[in-house]
Image 1 (tube, helix red, strand yellow):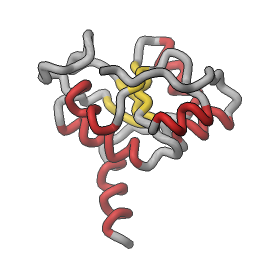
Image 2 (image 1 turned 45 degrees about the vertical axis):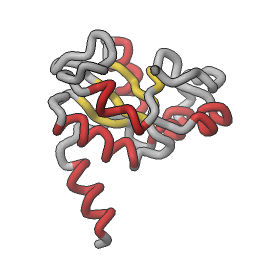
Image 3 (image 1 turned 90 degrees about the vertical axis):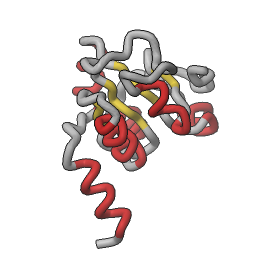
Image 4 (image 1 turned 120 degrees about the vertical axis):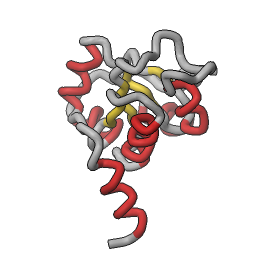
Length: 131
């Protein structure tokens, strides 16, 4: 097993990963869907309606419950579902958020592409990231 495979397995061991249908249900119950994909991917493929766009380089600062730069309303009780293209970098990011005090952080298994393949709603992409 490669080092990255071990890192990914370790990250996923703490996550209750969600499939697209469950993610949509959790979102309707108040969970944040946090899209960390690059702007070019969002432009080409679209976005999940109601998702919050946070560039990967800002993610920990915007979602750590004790960060002075956190998004409004983020608390230790926030459920955040991190979304990348295919569900790899989102696993690593969600595990980082858990270590920073957000136990409800997880990711979307299969990423945005699994969401779109499941036939769930997609809006045109290009929304700006949260500053």
